[in-house]
Amino acid sequence: MPSSLRDLPLGLIFLASLLAIHGAWAIGRRLGSRTQGVDAGSVAAMEASILGLLALMIGFSFSVALNRFESRRDAVLKEANSIGTTALRARLLPAPHNADVNRLLTEYVQLRLLLLQGATGAANFAATLERSNAIQEALWQQAKALVKQDNAMVPTGIFIQTLNDMIDAQETRLTAARNTVPEIVTWTLYGLAIMGAGFNGYGRGLQGKSRHLPSWVTGTLFATVILMIQDLDRPGAGFIKVSQQPILDTAASISSFKD
Image: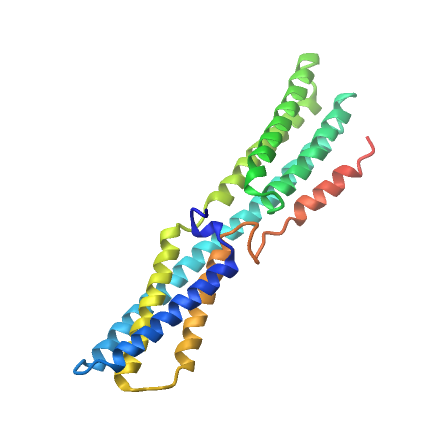
């Protein structure tokens, strides 16, 4: 059973939101057409207040979601650079450590692609992350072995520095992926959209207006924009995805190394 909106498909959320918004409009119009003695101006003022608040919250939420999307994109680039630099400096290490490190990094970069691009399901996420951590530990053991051989070697020192940066980059990327717009904000957006549609329909019912298209188009646009905010907030499962090209380029570069 889904525990939150983030566990539901975006298409299902969009259809449900359309039904809720347009259903609220239809119910409101029916109630308005059966009501007498209510000031239509006060209803219109209430509708304008709700829709104005909705527009303000949509603008704020979209800005937050976009900033966090950009943070995820920057985290991918930072991790790709740290892995690539670690691989380059590993080539300066003495044999057989250089070959062992290159083999570990080749597997590691493939796991990084799987971990956050949506290729693994929730059940495999923990196992993939555990294997990533195991490779990090294996790389650190390689560094410790090199230090025992000669702790004054410059290649070992610069390799340890970038290896530490690479390990830190994983946590930066995971934190960026987990840093999402609070779900209560999304529920509030939908609640305001449904209330606004209901008051709009109620006002039209009071006035006896029969044109439905403008109200339905407006409701659909609100549902679409709210869905886009949710899409931006899903790092690898929606229609708008963070590009994995920097990691792909790094994987291709590491696989081309001859020594």
